[in-house]
Image (cartoon, helix red, strand yellow):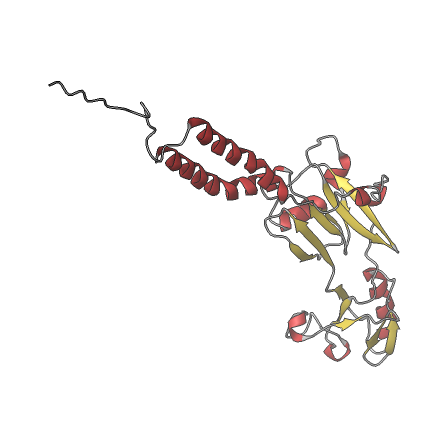
Length: 272
């Protein structure tokens, strides 16, 4: 007797368990790649003074920033003043000729008050606001000649500052002792430009009454006289903005580890 055995196979080539189709694996990678630019663009930042409102306020006349060899600083309210009279510490305020040097550590200064005045020993209130240092010296020599024969007087302003901000190696506020200082000198004091500094769009802000003057400097232009010779004054603020690719580079450095993990995960899922 012949017995017939019939072997039936409902599925000739059953898929292995856990294996995903190639199209699904490719789709996963595409989704990962497409999410990268979305992540990079979602946290974009804006540089200072590059908004349309500020651009509209920028002055076109930059003659106010040109180097002026005749410039002399005029003493203002809230300035810290030291007055040194040779061999007369009793008449001095922060004497340079005494035992100690004149500086804030010893409190040897007087501030110009809201009326533009300072108190002088043996004299009383003296209006100093609006005078240059030379004019203040000459006036004080005339005043103290009543007590001192041929007085030797030195006047210093202790808090003349320029503020340097942005893409600099050492940003901050810097005291200036010279009567005249240029942009290049102050960039040197701030440690030079950083790697991501935008050399084509450096901003200098200057208070002029109720208005603020703004100059845009291109340090890459060899023919730009202003960029080489611009004069900074006490109270000026210099802003060095970032290049546009700084934020992109930072985002890429942040997202790369995550994309590597996601890609590796997708590969593992495709091989299971």
